[in-house]
Length: 265
Length: 265
DNA sequence: CCATTGAGGTCCATATGATGGACCAAAGAT
DNA sequence: ATCTTTGGTCCATCATATGGACCTCAATGG
Image (cartoon, rainbow over all chains, first blue to last red; front, side, top):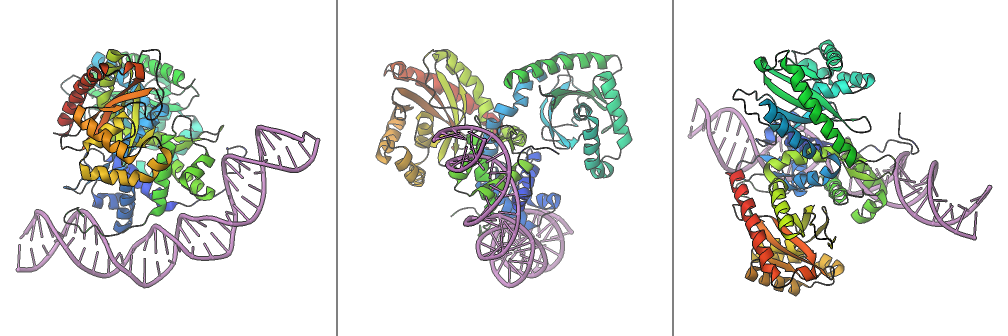
């Protein structure tokens, strides 16, 4: 596989860096409430001194910070600065914000942008709808394995079959242990239906009554850039309304893909 | 000094993490053109295998990525995602964008938001003005020691005197070697004038003819959040026009500080 | 067309620096 | 007043990062 001219040898190592960056990601996903040291220790599988040492290093770099009162860890300002600088290449959120506002206004429901992150999908932003009954199943920062949830399923379905199987295989354990309401075959069916209909549907699989539909956003070169999705209670996701919502999303996806084309040319 | 109840002992270490994160920052600042391995090696002072190993670790985490064709390193999507998540706490850019648009429209000149990053100021965004002659001295991602440039000086002047001296002392070497047109006393004078006038002025100190004025943005708790600034050629920065520009900036700074108050309450 | 230069990438013996069990301190909880 | 939970740290041991030497490819130039 891959990488042309240079031999792609080992040069493995820098394991503490790997560990530190895993912690960084972990703290990031917990961004809202802040992460406790004990949680971090548990979730990361590292032990306390190690975790603390790595956290200190991340703090020295400004990527995370610790609130003195609560002793909780949060993403720091350097993370924000880097993100700002990265948005030149990866500005999916910026490109999508207006679309989300359009969607939420037109449909009255809550809409989302997600990005692919390895074998997972992360929610980048949640744009509240105006309809008074809303589902709060998905918040910015939350992540689920690819295939779990509407936007996430849309992204998975947009990959080619060999990669889908790779992803599913990589996620097998998590799926079995944490997503009992799903099965690998279930997901494969969902993919088929998604490709067939042109949009992804989550009929309350994660939380009963909390439905969603999603559509993938593609880079000009065919890679998956992310996904838009809309969530609502089941009674607002009837078979008649679904295609209508899908059409709205399609329009916005086209707009975003147009901007991406411009950005990369 | 400081940190209350827990003893803040050593627990130093994780040096490779420090190094890796320095590289990350370095690649980030070079975000536009992408960073070459050889530059990274030179600027970081690390040697090639070490730098490469750390870069690989950063790539594994998705924080940076390497374009296969050019072999240059860029910020990766994870950096973007983290930044998005961090913007919940540190969303200076989001809060300022509208103000920048107002400023650039009202004045026809280019305007900027910067954030403090340790002893430096980083430019987060550059909003182009419409006036046909523009200075391109400051681009997003660029950084200068605190005190160098209008926004940067505004931030420095907003610190208390003991911290100013700490910052200046820390930057002494860089100032001497790379900013020969400045001197420590020069900067101290600039600070006095800034406090006096209520806005910071850079009368072409870095590049002749490229002037700027700046104003600091403060957090509700009195810490420096960042700065707005406006840049133009000298003929558009006459003594008469300066107070007018400063007034426009002041209005926008007030707006942003209002939003910050809301965000933290 | 074959040096030569320079950039990207890697190997591996060595010794530096990360590891984690044991421990201490503070703050709730009973 | 004692127990438990959570945050933080020390230091002897050994795993892991280090960097000089080396390889490969592409471009320059004689």
